[in-house]
Length: 132
Image (cartoon, rainbow, N blue to C red; front, side, top):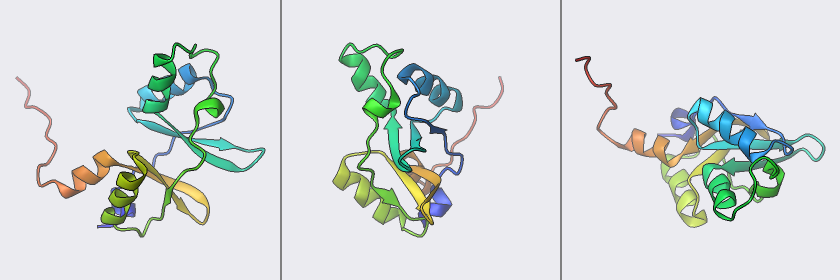
């Protein structure tokens, strides 16, 4: 199976000036664990994850003053849509992270997470409990 078949194509993109609280609210509302941080001035692409926000809070930093730019991973490992899930999982294991931004022609077209890969590799389908 390929990354393009497993990835989420709804990508939350935020700017580097977003506060961590703003980013957390947007991520929570969409029930996602990462946001692409796009700096239009440098055309740089980074990623802000729930772990980045948690580390900041754990260090006692104020989420209303801390910005995405200060906590963004900028040395991002990108995946291509035609990577296999094995390639994506290998990149995640080697890098010690749980999300990959998927680029096509230098544009973010999706994010693939460990959860996406497990969902595809698992024979167990996700079921909603029956109404009582």
